Length: 167
Image (tube, rainbow, N blue to C red; front, side):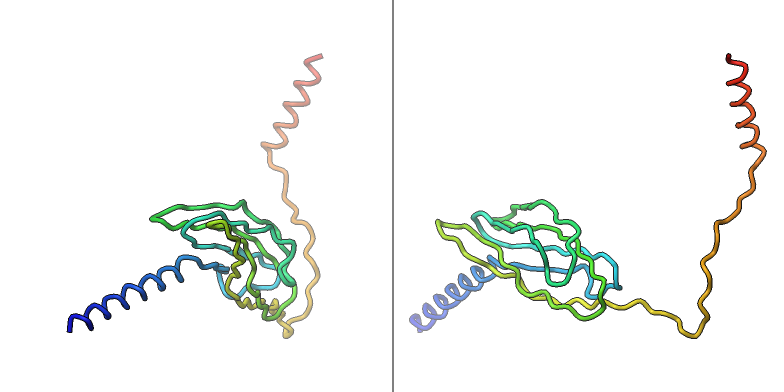
């Protein structure tokens, strides 16, 4: 009976260690939302959760068919033995459709080793702009005419008088 309890306790500890080490380093690529309209910008958070070491998240030249508008600096938060390194990326797409962002590699230097860790894959739906075909095409409106107020006229007159009498 003692042998079974010891074996159960030992296996539980081993499973907890493996489960915690598997959770200890994960790379996530998270969209703010799962769909955008054509031409909209979307912010993506690329993060990596790890226990120690240095992380190299390269600046991306391209990301599928998306335009990369901006990439933030690499930031690291250290809490309770785990570090979270992340970067924000602003993307834009002008073609409607469903786009898959496959795993993006980053490089993790730890204990004298360098590992390549890939982020998760994500889908983003880019919606086209709805056009109401039941209505006629309307011309572009011209500039709005705003009348000049008496305050503006008074200001111009006083400035002119000040310039004329100042000489």
